[in-house]
Length: 294
Length: 252
Image 1: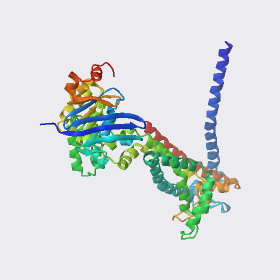
Image 2: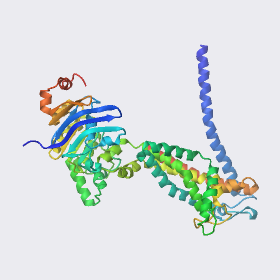
Image 3: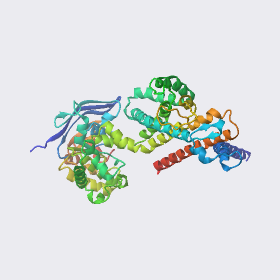
Image 4: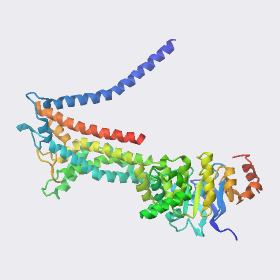
């Protein structure tokens, strides 16, 4: 009898332990969301220390000293940088995935895949250091303004940073395509390349898209690496690849350390905007995954 | 008039790594006939079938020795594999339509060969589907996904897809083993008409099927051809004791 009872207590205890662990993630996400939204929305709900939401979202200058807080140029900078990185990174990543999954001899796969995995593990500050030390230096020679820190520098750094995500998720998706499709295509006299473009990639489409969306999430949320190469100007919508940009993330990271009052709250507001972007991306991702299952 | 020989397989050995899957296989396959490969699982019959359009090339560490000729040309010599596969079509054990429309499934092969003219593709699609006795069932759903068809329809679609290439030979790897008896009967009926135009080689587990539809039969055991010749001869008067044991159901 005691044995059975003991066992039951053990079972229960572990059940709660597992449940408690699961709560850590859930509580964290809600806590972070709550504080970011609480602090970030405070300036817009009136009061003496308020700020106009419209001016915040449509302003193109960020001068805490003059009480001017506009983030439109940051939103645009973040979107341009992300879009640029996706535009370059996705084709390269997809082709790498095809190469690893379909074309490479096993000996080459053994080199490429660990390299990709290692790339994913490099701390982002090192990407930034590399970007500053190498990419920015090289770009300096070509820039009309003779400055290397620019939108294009951010795009290059982000391109490399999203590669591991795009590659590994696309590769998984390509490997999940039933072999019967591939055999069927080859047996009809299609070449390997035709099979890849007409059968494999379309069949893996939703998985590849998931990789792209995760890449977008990574690019838009990246802070450290981007901060070092972006230039972070206090004003101006970027109109050329050589313009400096100030992404939403770096705005927060640069100033949170010393900001106070309204200034600090509006940095939280910047976080809210970022949060909304990430939530939209996650919604898209979830619907993609659901479509794949359905 | 003697039957024309399509394939000659001479002293063919095939190894997967160190495992020998085919041992000194010698067979001739006649044009416009149905040739059946029978034998217990793992006897090498599917492996041999896949030698005829070089699908074994896709597997790593396969080593092939000996010769296979198609119309007296060595298909393991200096030939274009893609060209070979347009001449030698294949239907697989499990129906494997692509996840696209019925139309696009049939047009896939011709498109890969560079045919873009819509009228020509329409013509090929219709003719192939009619020939595979599927027209009445799919004519109203050409632009719907092929995955919505029944298993038997999918398999006939795969036959139509192979026919669209106007091949000379159609290889069938247990084409009815995943189908119900009615769908099976339809495909067997289809083979009867197809052999007038094409040379058919079929791997089958079912002795009855081989007896019903084939003109010639080869019996495989452990990678060797034990006996081959006219189906009627093999089934009524097998020369080898092992053949007799197999077709009378004593093993396998």
